[in-house]
Length: 283
Image (cartoon, rainbow, N blue to C red; front, side):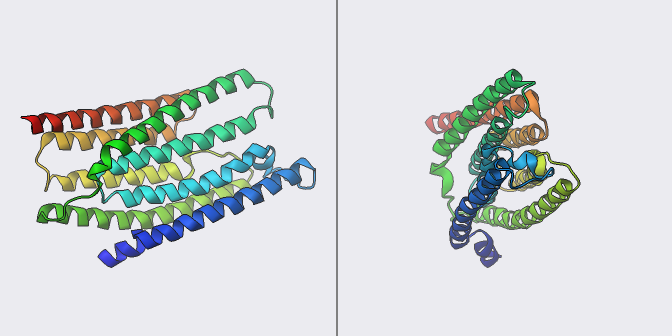
């Protein structure tokens, strides 16, 4: 199973996928930009594709979607390292997801002049959410980078890490299957005239499976962790993930507030956990 993990989530695979993601993002951006140009010049007429190419800002959606796909892979790679590291990567993914939504909403301004003021107000709200999520991801990175290397000397911890590696490998397979299903369903919807670019595509299903994996990790951790603050911390992190999942499927201001609530909860839980650890050390 270790070889299988190395094949799916090892450094060499990560470098390969990173290069593919960057190159695909550049090529995808250029192709999307050309389509927008052709539509603007009247050379490309398509009712189904119009919402995706009626503004040059729409071209930003493609590269950010590809980068998001790679960041989700990075999130899965972080699962065996530590629970807090994977939560930090989770907020990095959601931060990019919000940025992609902002670009899309900016591209829609001016297409319809009926609700420009309300659209700008909502974009301002999303900008605030982006800053808070970005700050949350930076906070997690600064506080969890020290604990990224887990000691393998203890047999119990080593077994726990191996179980998380098995879970991460399974999640990679689910990630690929959900991505194929989501892209196929979205493509068929476009052909049928459904032209919405919702953030719930793929991410709602994936975060549902991510919650399942987090709960499994929490239950398995009961075999190895007997400290209540650690268990409460992991439970709080799962709660923040659940709130994110609900926020992804909730449009408008309610979804933005849920993202803020999730980030605030995760930061408070991590801060309390760090304070508890420092207090125990001093005693």
